[in-house]
Length: 252
Ligand code: G3P
Ligand code: MG
Image (cartoon, rainbow, N blue to C red; front, side):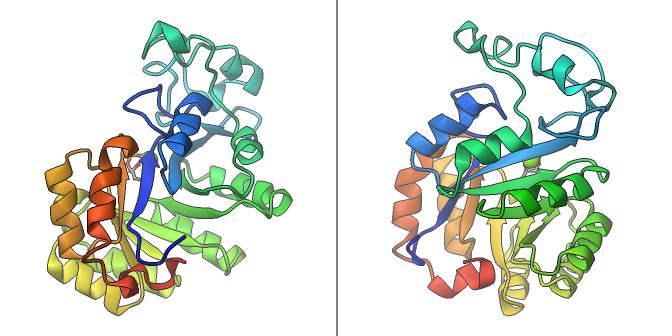
């Protein structure tokens, strides 16, 4: 991609138009021109990485139960689309492997690891799918440190939802992370300057409002997570006018 562009992540896919974390949401995100797709990973009972946000299937499927207690077969028999709209009744919870097969090397995937136990399974899968372009993130910074120890070249991003961002940033730097992913409410000049000084890109989550997006890009964010990549394309293009290419740091 063009180094001058703002990087637009489709948060859980094009989740404003399709059920989150489904292949339908990912296909729509690609069609809308997103640069990458953010998705969430939990493990099934057999320890297969599954793409779903919550610890349970209750909110986003027609079933009930804890993801880690259910087999892949049980998880994939659930309807993961009707809660959003009847038109998506055929959608299932994808395995991470299915998403890798779908994505190939066409667009970057941000794998947000939700359960610490999933780290090892994700590394094993990445050994098989070496062509997939990934950025691995988590709020669990101990897990990211462990992944860095096991796989020093794995591109990492540290998620941060706390006003005490200096310590997480320090850990991200120690792990040679590519990016820092703060909540939009945390983005400030000091945070951006500190991250960029250390060579990390700053990508903020989650923003659907064009005015907020513009402000974040002006402050120096080089990437955004949005549920609506279609709506933010225009802002991302405007952002190119004032984005300092060095803001991308080591991520590309
Ligand atoms: O990765 C950014 C964002 O997805 C983190 O929060 O709860 O939407 O997974 P959440
Ligand atoms: Mg997420």
